[in-house]
Amino acid sequence: MHGVNFDILERRDASFYGGRSLSELEHQIARWAREAKLEPIFFQTNHEGEFVEYLHRLPDLADACVINAGAWTHYSRAIADALGVAALPAVEVHLSDVEAREDWRKVSVFDGLVVEKISGKGADGYREALDVIARELGVGA
Image (cartoon, one colour):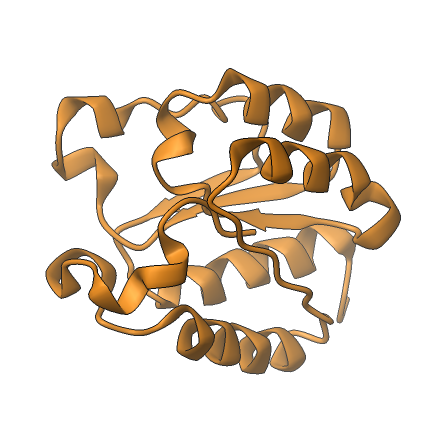
């Protein structure tokens, strides 16, 4: 799940976000998912309510979640509540190293709701997240 401003990912600061488009990133994630014996589905929106509603439906669609909610990660209690209600194994991912950026980015409303937080590894963070999900689901074990 990708949140706000991911639809223009290639236009964002490449030093933080890697310079890829969302489509390119999702193609790479899909390849890694298949290698991990997982079947990915993707979702992106710039509308917080749509993100919440998708989390409400997620238990009927998926067994786990990789979530990069963008800036919402740092303040949206509504999304955090919906993630808690979804009650699926989830991994929080950030392309940039949020711990080394502005103070407000160091706060995650998902703390305690995710299995793991991966930050600052660029696109490779998604590969690591998929490995965590595969382990949590017992895929390939």
